[in-house]
Image (cartoon, rainbow over all chains, first blue to last red; front, side):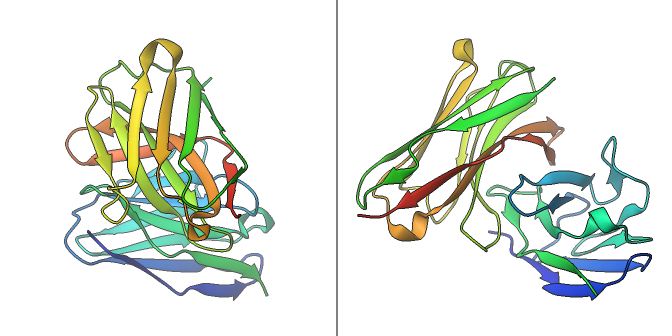
Length: 107
Length: 123
């Protein structure tokens, strides 16, 4: 199975901050990396697919980059509704695997 | 509008078999590229992918759970059923189903999720 490792596990940030979350795959997954946002008590929501493609309806302050084994999710200007947990997930091979999550909290 | 809804027992006893049903609308599981996946999340923990069934009836399972899982579909009823045998308290979690769409060999997105159903395993 491909292991996905996110860093940091949690971070504190203020509204307006630029936030970066990284995800590393245990092997080359080319660009087949998705990002999800999950708020407490809610189902995950797809933000980014294929490393850098923005899902329809997702604000443009979210962006993704990377290829191979190293990927990044960036929030250019953190908004109050962005405080949540973010997960990366690979779709290169089955079984699919998720990172352990990064919780973005209010500073 | 695409929707999915999970249903099943809220409480199961250890060693029992869990049966969960995902009822969906707004898409057909007969359409090429369409799949339904199951994912779970223990309280306070990360998401864990469990299984997927594809439009062509191909099935895929978590490596660690594959001996306990069975996924099936009833296309006419727009339902996908997941069974998990020999339930244990560590299987206590919220279980989600999600539509997964394939674009080519590797690109797959879980773009619509159900609200989840909470299952507690306790005697």
